[in-house]
View 1 (cartoon, rainbow, N blue to C red):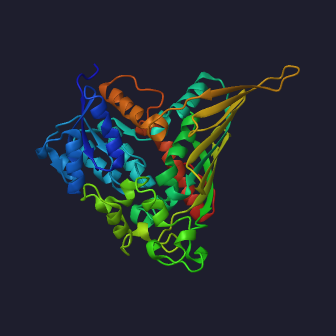
View 2 (cartoon, helix red, strand yellow; view 1 turned 120 degrees about the horizontal axis):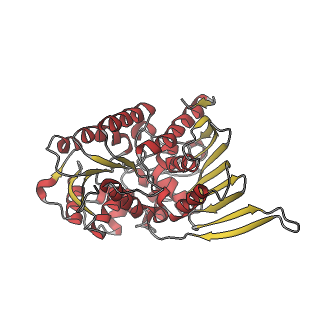
View 3 (tube, rainbow, N blue to C red; view 1 turned 45 degrees about the horizontal axis):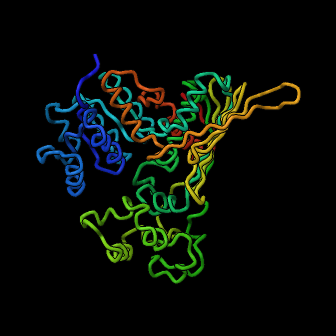
Amino acid sequence: MPKRGPVKCIIVGAGHRSLWYGEYANMCPEEMRIVAVADPNPVRREFFAKRFHVPEDRLYSTAQEVAALPKFADAVINGTMDHQHVETALPLLRAGYDMLIEKPFAVNKEELVELYDTARSLNRKVMICHVLRYSPFYREIRRRIIRGDLGDITSIEAAEYVSYHHMATCYVRGKWRDSNKCHTGMLLAKSCHDMDLITWMKSGIKPARVSSFGSIYQFRRERCPEGAGDMCMTCPIEEKCDYSAKKMYIDHPDRWRFYVWDSLEHIENPTIEDKIAELMKPENPYGRCVWKLDNNVVDHQVVAIEFEDGTTGSFSLVSGSGRDERTIHITGTKAEIYGSMESGRFTIRSIDPRKGHECAVKEIDTKASGGHGGGDIRLVEDFVRYMRGLKPSISCTSLEDSVAGHMTVFLAEESRLTGKTVEYI
């Protein structure tokens, strides 16, 4: 029988992704309610408590504190850092909670298996935040594949273009720049969405073999412009540099504010002067030269996939573009689809062998507002349906259905590092 009343959720990890998902409780309080928050940062705990009307006695520092208490909610929204997902999820699953987990849900094969086996043995509902499945763009493409518009899928080509300021902020200066600290490479941290989409479009047909190539090409000390200083705000060539911290974070103070200004969270309304002073600190990576940091994650990578049915897929991760963009081109035995998520439009080109014809072309516009092409809120809405025992949408990102995409990333990284083609086991 479907559950009645709002689904009661605990936020574990008060980061910006949890904030996005939690907003559904303010939009639809009759559907979902945030009843507790756990995070080691007291500033964030208090911010979330105020945002979601959480009482003081339901604020905790760790997931373990919550798991030690008698169960008092239906589910957990796990928005902790990538390498903390499994270690925080396991005790909460054992304590009786179902869960929505931010991607990537595991940072290696061993963690993936442990989480999967635990959730399955306890019969817990676990959904992964592969929000792009919920964007109208990808959802409509998937719907047409299911309907048979393309025939049998023979090839999938996808690409993600990461803008120069996105790359510099998150993967050169930011918290995902060093795989030894964040426990993920760029392919997992940024593009596990795309690996999930490719395997999702293949409708459960597993990859058989994976190969991959990639490296750090641009953001290395030997490519540093002549005369560049260590700190952007005092650099002699700052005016000529496209990656200047002043241009990225002072001239655009709100673009990456959740990452860049996290050290100023204790100030309610930090001024530009506060922000300049913060970028002047030698220990602040956001104020340092992009060619002189400790980053070790790739800035470009390609992945080739052979599926069990003999069809193929490919993915290109490219940084340094003028803007963020994802593209996809799927070819079937009857028709093909190609388009850009950011535009919200894709084209269907169907075979037309009639005399005087070559192909039939149809343009589809799915443009939607909101985070991740309109997918963020739709994902939470589907999670609530999943929790209530109602039929989820075709986009449902259950743990069982998300394993193949993550495994493809792990195999791609193994291939990149060893130079060998790796088989999916």
